[in-house]
Amino acid sequence: MNTEDLSSFFGWMTILNSAFLLYWWLVISFFKEAVFKLHRKWFPLKDEQFSAIHYGGMAFFKLLVISLNVTPWLALRITSG
Image (cartoon, rainbow, N blue to C red; front, side):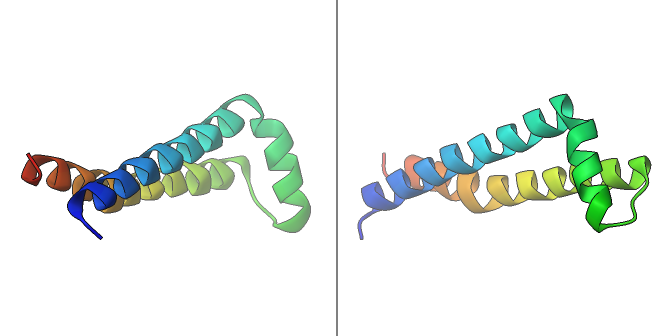
């Protein structure tokens, strides 16, 4: 696999993972009550716990996307010319 293929792979992974993160944020932002009700059927959660879990999860996922997708893509783009 050459650097152009790897760069393309990491570029698409960045786009797909960023789209998933945006979708997650939109669902929690606009349909928080419905998602909270659904989760409360399975887990005994307070509203503050629910928000902390989801926003903490989004922050962790964003860090993973940046470190595992964006950084390698940028490094390959810089080194390939």
